[in-house]
Length: 162
Length: 360
Image (cartoon, rainbow over all chains, first blue to last red; front, side):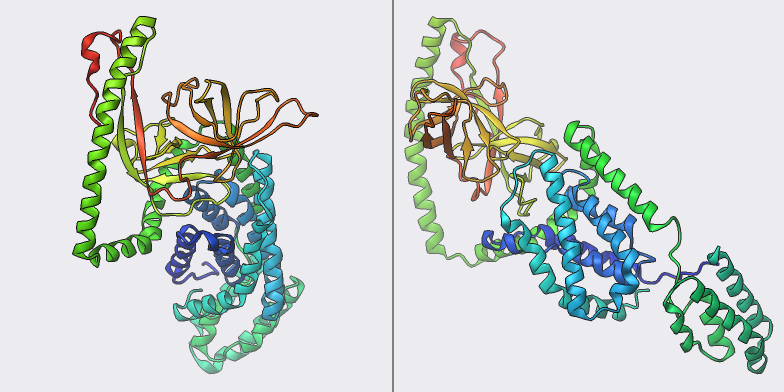
């Protein structure tokens, strides 16, 4: 007998695919610095909502696909995403009961962590250090979090993902 | 340990509820189970035990609850998150090192990119459909004007080509006198950029021709104006091109004016190349055209690369700071030329080497 009865995993998959597409979708050059870390944001939501289903393993795989898609070193995104998935799986019971603004701040810390790990990899592999604009997506992601949370919660309820 | 007890309790509840179908019989035997589960949850330090307050009454719903249909499982299964995270981090680091230091992972990447190809396609759809709609509504007069313009341009280019052929023949004769070998011509293939935004911190683009069209790793890539970069990865239907401005790219060049040879390194910015190995007294000026020298063996010689935009001599330093601006519009390219350099087997200068391979 299994304790968990998983339902409607397709919805999770579709949301992840949309996030991956959004992360490489062509946008005007001026807007490129503002592109939020879609994949990380969506991953944070699903880890928070369903830590039994989406955790470190899924995060790693997702990161690998993002690496292939965006042409970075294999493992560059995978590293950051699996670390934030780990933090959430450890703390999800606390983060869940935070009010939304407080959750946004937690999400900002997680997004910064992902960015920092990526910066570290870039530094270690001899790529040039980006400008301060590099940190802007975390801010955009923080502002977007309430909206993403509500939209994905509705998705989860609408498609009865469990 | 707690998980085992939990499963045992659940099994017991299920057993009871299936054996005693009646509603009245249910409540009695279940009560001890209920308190036991609560106790386990509190011991386990979970805060979910409040959920048991919503524990339903009634045989069917009770069984459903016991089977875990109505509430989510409280325990994470499998290895602990810490162990999983450790494995993931170690794997990622191993992959990064393997991908950066050695070139073992290109096959794996090609395989994975087969899976992501539909994503790439759908990411480009909005741009594609916008272009398509624009094409539909373009007016006839505009098309005619376009055609006239292209016709004129074609005439001018043809006239120049005549001159070029004469010059090339002359060049060949002179080289024959010097006794040096010479490359006859290049075959080119036009590829379009796939509209996706790759990692903004690397200078690379994706084009829509791959190994099925004969594209190979290391192949030079040009646009109408100048050198763009070289192919670093291929799949069947696409290829990744590393631009000359990427920080990992270096290109042997020479100054067109006096033949001074040096190396142009990418800076990571789309409009900047650095020439770090020139001494302070080198003969280089702002406005000098840099062309490929062909010394690296990858790029055919003589293609324009960049124009020098800044020369700073700092007396305290051994080398001058020289910055160049790429002649190719790297931020605005839509189409690129993939080049195959044809090296003749025969000794050049014999009469039949005059023929040029027509571009594809």
